[in-house]
Image (cartoon, rainbow, N blue to C red; front, side, top):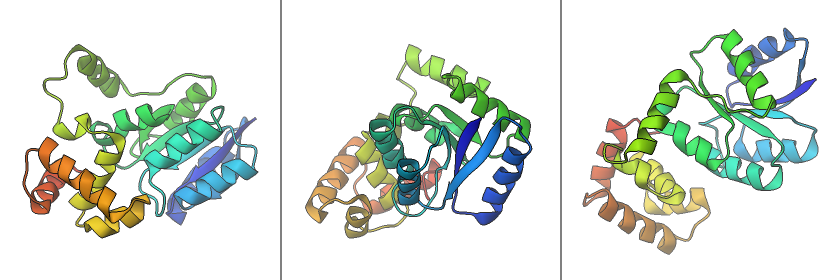
Length: 210
């Protein structure tokens, strides 16, 4: 029996996932979470095999959740479910420890297939993403600038690009304002821009605004 944790802040989405799981004889809904912190608390307290993890939940960011799970519960498999296209988040999700990435426009049958594959120790990727990963291995010349950032730089970019101040970004990520300012300075240099407004425009163009 595959024990799943449903992690999504939308009750309607959680209900839909519950129904899909309930229809599968080899799966059971072992718990639910609506924030990143709840995900970690539930995984620590319950027997969980697979986490169905939404990207855009309140509180702790999904990349931090993934890395915490990889360190604390390496046996737990994580299938990221997202409304965002694969090219925006999938590569970073895999680097942080995800076992699969599935956009929410896929069918229930594809979700069940993905759960089974990651539970068996495999990685679930779509054909389009597999092709893109292969191209990235061959060449880095055409990759967007944000894909070359470190995890923390990327998180700061997403927050500043969403209109948050440096102080707000620092609070969200558990950093000091001085450290967040240092990351901002690195971003401006690496992204070849000169202001937060430029970061907002870049984030909007590449679908990085949360």
